[in-house]
Image 1 (cartoon, rainbow, N blue to C red):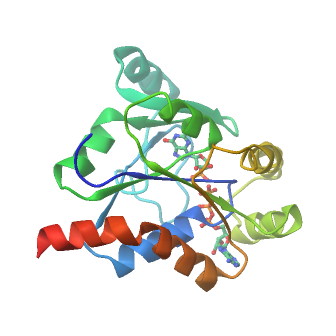
Image 2: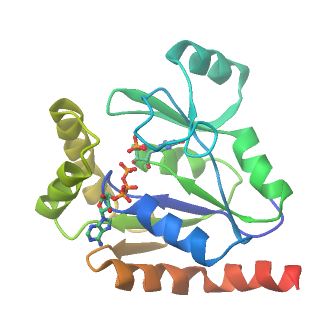
Amino acid sequence: MSGPRPVVLSGPSGAGKSTLMKMLMKDHEGVFGFSVSHTTRNPRPGEEDGKDYHFTTREAMQEALERGDFIENAEFSGNMYGTSKAAIEDVKAKNLICILDVDIQGVKRIKETDLDPIYISIQPPSMEILEKRLRDRQTETEESLQKRLEAARVDMELSKEPGVFDVVIINDDLDRAYEELKDILNEEIKKVQEAKS
Ligand SMILES: Nc1ncnc2c1ncn2[C@@H]1O[C@H](COP(=O)(O)OP(=O)(O)OP(=O)(O)O)[C@@H](O)[C@H]1O
Ligand SMILES: Nc1nc2c(ncn2[C@@H]2O[C@H](COP(=O)(O)O)[C@@H](O)[C@H]2O)c(=O)[nH]1
């Protein structure tokens, strides 16, 4: 795939991926493009269809999967999620750095494609802090929260395996984690900025 290298942000739900990604996109206008995933979960307050996710039904998603519309998909916390080929192509067509926010199953599936992204894992400082962040976010039912914490335990173990991620960032202090993320992406950011000037 030509153009800037895509970036995969992964890590447990509540680790801070969206927070860091939004900071990155706000500070670097016209550099990054978000790969808008499909999901069967309900929108949270403030989330916009087509911007945060393409909100869809299980039936429609299943049909799209059968058509081969997705580069990867996963079942997470009782809902379907997936990255469509079109989501990646939309960003690629604008010559922007494509950011994908996917779970660990997505990471494994993307490794089987020719996307060749930079793999970054965002990890919380501890399970206790992760649970607090998820509870404070007030987006989950108790059942969904427990499923997310269970998935987080698996994610935290897998992220320690050598070769899965290029970099693991511990999101303890937000500003420090953001600086670390920017440093890793600096070379790709410069490439896009130089191509525009
Ligand atoms: N370093 C930090 N210190 C304290 N709170 C944080 C920090 N980073 C993120 N948060 C808060 O933690 C909560 C979870 O963050 P966020 O929604 O970005 O996580 P996420 O990894 O994108 O989760 P999901 O995968 O479920 O979308 C948010 O309320 C956010 O404001
Ligand atoms: N494999 C994929 N995982 C995805 C995708 N889009 C989001 N996600 C991951 O799902 C969980 C939960 O997200 P939430 O928005 O419901 O909190 C989180 O870990 C995301 O990274 C996708 O297209 N494919």
